[in-house]
Image (cartoon, rainbow, N blue to C red; front, top):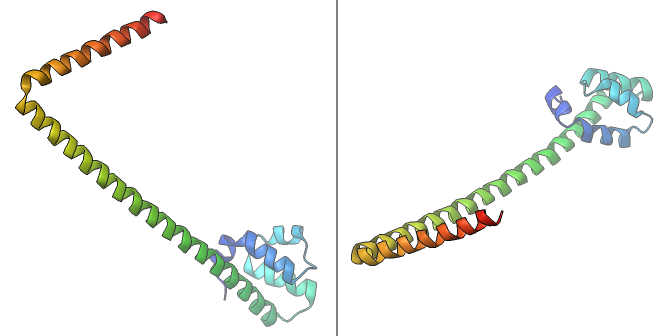
Length: 139
């Protein structure tokens, strides 16, 4: 038997399949049922005159069809998410390694030539200060 959770979770999709299967049901009638299994079976029996067992079997098949499609979509989304997560993780690791290499190289350069490094840092700060001053003055 289809569970209430399965029906509610896939109600919009299931509603379309039910309308295809039993064309005499209206959207308003299906809206009143809102995924309630017993009410749905009763409504279909009332409208079609079919036996309860036959209606239940058909509703279960339609529900399983919806659940299968929903499950496949969910699995595909999960797979794409995992692939994207792995790609981001790989890129993050590469960036982290390059930053560490750059930091190590800069550290070695500063240790080998401390005076030149200090002069470059001072000059860079001076140029940045002049640029910021000009930008602020122009406003």
